[in-house]
Image 1 (cartoon, helix red, strand yellow):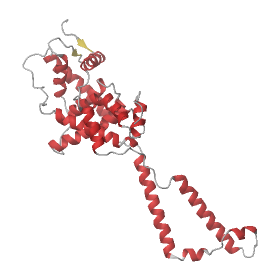
Image 2 (image 1 turned 180 degrees about the horizontal axis):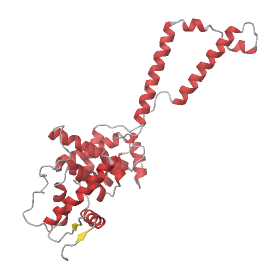
Image 3 (image 1 turned 90 degrees about the vertical axis):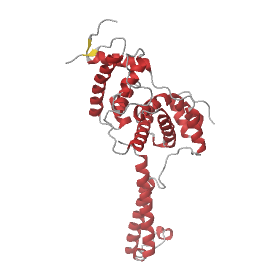
Length: 191
Length: 132
């Protein structure tokens, strides 16, 4: 077993040599965001955990296929996203419409009867009201600051599709947040 | 806070970005690291290694050039009787027609070439970057 890696390049190189400790560095670095991507798709905590685990194992097995053309995170999230979609299709059938608004999520995001004081809870509720693809795209864009090209790589959507979803999601999120946040949220200006 | 104003798309973008950054990503379960590493160990996943074809491209090129050179030399030697050069002592003389006439030899060469070519092609496909 090698020395503890100090950066991503060392961790990837070590993982390729079979050093689990090096791979543990990558897991620690990206587990939260990978879990977030999984949750945006499957909307179920236990399943998201399984998806995250499977994604990391797949990433380890296919490290030889990571050529370094994109960021490691982008490559990992693309594996996570596809694994999550497979899980969702296994649960809800192969013809599931990823662009449809999902059923209420099983993570405590029931429609609030009163205004939400907590901004994080409000955001989670608002995200749960978006279709699976839209929620994933907007999370990758704002949380991980991925650009359009990286989101295209991660999700397999086209660039124009990603832009449309971002635009649509912004408006929808604002509408929901304005209704449910105690503090005021400014509305989008109508052009 | 003031009464709701109206934001243009850039300002809305900034507000959403701040909200997302403030909330951060969802927290993965604490034990997920151990479970992932345990799964790796349990399935005895070998160190990932790059798949290389049995015969690299440069070896193919050298092999083809060498075969063509031998055939050309043998053909020219067959027609040039009694040259008596020093090279004749080193190069074994053989008849092209006897080689071509042997079905077993030619079938073996063809089968081997096809299998090696297939292995190279599959190896190149596997190494190529994935596209969605």
